[in-house]
Image (cartoon, rainbow, N blue to C red; front, side, top):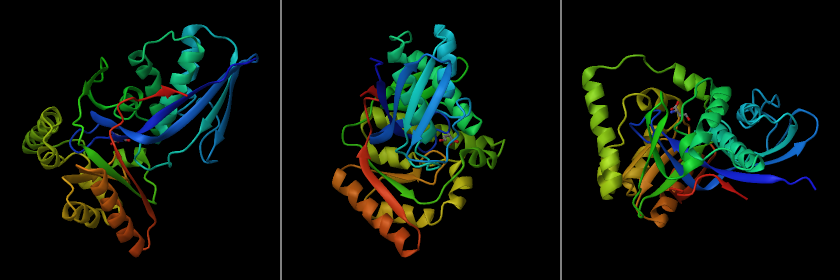
Length: 307
Ligand code: HSE
């Protein structure tokens, strides 16, 4: 019998305020799944469930692009059947392309009998990210693969650090029903920033890391300010200011854009509060004629897993 290897990889919040391209955390409970089995004829036969808007060309799809290199590296000359179960919304800022890549690579590594350690899989996942948005940023794939809150300390060479998160850190992910293309959301960002802006950003980056280590959620909220991306991207998220005002009024420590948006993440210290913030912001969007949904959740500590 031809064994099927199936894996799940969680959604992620990249950037997390000031950590553009260097911070990301895995989100508990939501993600993509991929099932893989071998076939005799060479090449990848990709089936996508849940959307018809993603490329079926294995070279262009974020789930299958990394597998082409994995197959080459392990010297596998047969083919693969790949079923991608797309649960995450496209263009949502929740690391949808990354979750597909990570789930595929995790299932394929198992199929090949674990030739690569978990961290080694990152470089394959990055190929998927580059295929999806033209840029191999690691702040979605690394937390989706490893779980938890991750810092990309360096890209060349790639070095990632896992940071502990306080148990009482809860969050609400709000997803207004519009799409943002990551490539375009990167293209609008300036090339240069002033020394004062960089100093402010460094302070906030240090603040986020310190807050996670000492469990100070107020410090975490104060450190969420960003100068690299949020001031330019929030203009294409309708009612961003209103959403942030509601979150703060209802007791959140802060709210920022998740990845390149339009999803936003509000941080708080209880599941009840996360749910309430989500309800209030969703209502606000609906009153203004924009659909929205939310997930009250926390940081996933597991990352990609076999099913
Ligand atoms: N760091 C990336 C960006 C994440 O903000 O463009 C995209 O999901």
